[in-house]
Length: 69
Image 1 (spheres, rainbow, N blue to C red):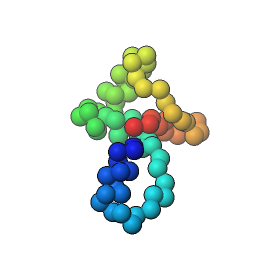
Image 2 (image 1 turned 45 degrees about the horizontal axis):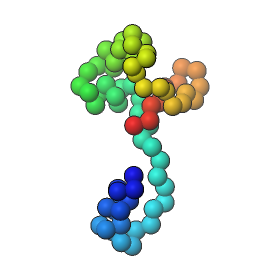
Image 3 (image 1 turned 180 degrees about the vertical axis):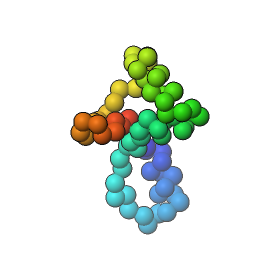
């Protein structure tokens, strides 16, 4: 993040950083990024929980789960 901020300052010296937050993604986003279906990604998450990233939040029952990217 530090290098990204330095790059942005070089490109836009008068810009002001207002906020820096992590990207939160859902299972569908992860599946799209690696080129597989959401259903297949879910099977991997359930079948190999120890090798899948930990969830970062769950807002309410049956709402989507998010992962930090």
